[in-house]
Amino acid sequence: MQLAWLQTFMAVYHTGSFTKAARELGVTQPTVTQQIRSMELEIGHRLFERTTRGTVPTPRATILAQDVRESMISLNAAIDRHFTPIDQNRPLRLGTTAELAASRVVPPLARLVADGTDVRVLTGVSHELLSRLGEGFLDMVISTTRPRRRGIEATPLCDEELVLVASPRLAEETFPDGPGTGTGRELGKAVLITYAETLPLVREYWRVVFDRDPDIHIGAVVPDLRAILAAVAAGAGISVLPRCLCEEALAEGAVVPLIRPEVPPINTLYLAVRNGALQDYRLSRIHSELLRTAQHWT
Image 1 (tube, helix red, strand yellow):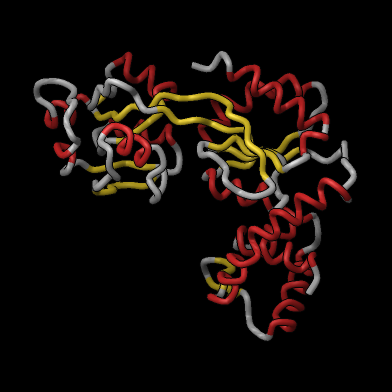
Image 2: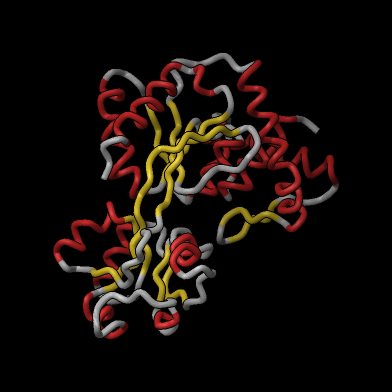
């Protein structure tokens, strides 16, 4: 079993495509196909099935990916530190959420890009991006959750206040006398618009404000906070959003806070890199620039 085969396997597993995996790895699609076939011959089982929905891992492939993920993270970090020369011509690959890319991450990098630092930005859900970071496919992740993986070091970037918001009409129906301060049981019949099934931001808000996990119906899952804000303003349901993202909508009255807690919950953003990765001067400049500009984020 070769290390390259495992790296190829993990690329196919995460991308769901032999072609996309080849693009990430910088090899040809036939090379990916041959390596996966070699793995299947080695272990005696199929790893992927081609369907109309793409390349789907078999149950054995899922188990294998879970078993080797953490080891691959540590091994790739060690390879980067000791054996991989820094390629100053390779574009740096950054991962973050779509709304952070648009409002926070890309603008501070404009000067560095103009000066010749090539970057590629991949958007997605933080926990998936952190997996890609650990496996060596990304150089840095601006994460909405605290990384807890071996081989990854994280620096707090900024704190953002969380607000439970609804449309004015829905808020009045829920709390006729104004924003509530109760146990949250009044929200039992509300419909939740959330970023992911795991309820990021929502779970943190409920635990801080109501001291329990959320028990609320999920009406829609939309992996873009800007789209969630639009859905809430249109009356689709309620959601928890960073105040910085919905500040303008709050000021205009398009959405209103449902709860006014004495201590507003906060969510911390993190800059995550693999151990030793900041030896690359270009990545270190991006890291420093984001830390500097984050001091002025509101």
